[in-house]
Image 1 (cartoon, rainbow, N blue to C red):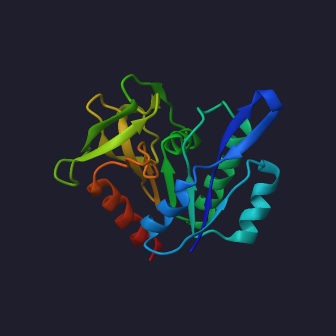
Image 2 (image 1 turned 60 degrees about the vertical axis):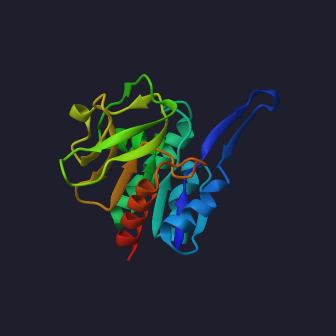
Image 3 (image 1 turned 45 degrees about the vertical axis):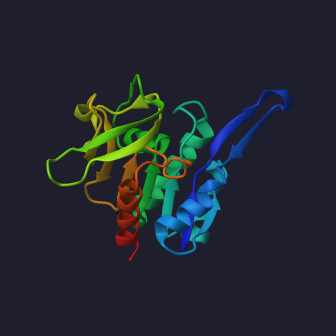
Length: 206
């Protein structure tokens, strides 16, 4: 299985560098979620080269990873916009994580709000529709989020926090799933959260 995953941008002022970076835990995480080995390409934040690389690599799955606030790394914002355009044109499944969910919301015309109490903690998220899904306990590392009443029209809320922010959503017509928690972190949440992501990915990748 071929996947493309976006990378965060770290600024090293002492060296005058802007570095693309990705947590090494993502390799094992992608294998676990897919239930098979994944050939994952960490995509450089080069909007001028992204389209040609995608046409050559032909990914079967695209992951928008976490890190960076929107607007903090314009080259990343543009690269991820190209990834979403490619996924829409070719019906490629997308998993968007934390900042990735925020980027998907923005790309589809939605807004973000600053939240309190969502950084370096865990909390319960509840199904947006009663009885449809089990409650989950998930990790949380974000300060920007999405209010249910401002969710982009192309997205459907799946999980909500008690403060009314959206913790997971799916696209209404494309195989895209977005979550605000981090499955790659050492404490990814309860097993039910991992199982839910795994089932979704394996279903859309079948």
